[in-house]
Image 1 (cartoon, rainbow, N blue to C red):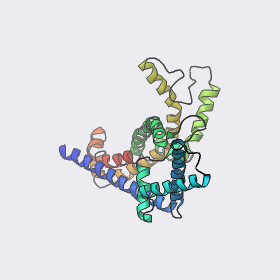
Image 2 (image 1 turned 180 degrees about the horizontal axis):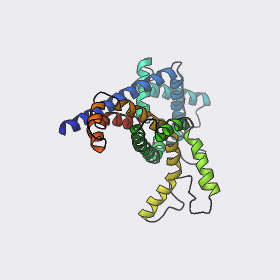
Image 3 (image 1 turned 180 degrees about the vertical axis):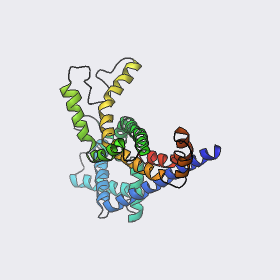
Image 4 (image 1 turned 30 degrees about the vertical axis):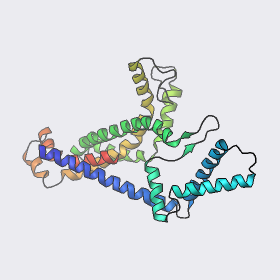
Length: 288
């Protein structure tokens, strides 16, 4: 038992490291392609110039300076800041600098029409919680539902459930926002004023409920439509994928003799069929 747990933990860790390596290489390749003609460097220089000019305008109040002298002062400070951030280094090293800024979410500041500028990192941090909650819940439901439905379909290939899974797989070609619009039209517009009506927009009601239980229930109600649209869009293709894998796995040499010699049931599933599948299940969970 300990050996199996260690094997699963080692597999999960190695898979996570491989995914991180692939993510690092892919991100660097995208940055290198985007910065091929210096677009990222120009954007960074423009941002530095804007920040330097704004800072000098707020700090230095010297009316005797002419516009040309002020521009020369800004250019000198921009070049100093440009060298300090390493943007005068070779192309490969500059791309690593851009990659590090992207990894650390150092993406500059947002300048709204009204209000003070806000760091993009702060905006992403505020939105990451609801995003992880919605997509994490939806992808977990897709993974669990698709696996168990596919297992039921793979028990009897060619029966009605198996044929239904294969035929419905094409529905996943439609994007999640399409199903989201349909669900809004049904549960918000058509069923308005009925007990089946659901809220849309935001993550909690306005004003927020004063109690913790009421707040949690409000968040769960607001999650129904977006989570359902994501689940519907991804469920059928995932189920068909798992069904194909399980049908192929059931014909392996280590599964067929056991299934033929023992009575079918949970014992056979757990001992000879489902035991080799956790690595694939963990891989799909990590990918999602």
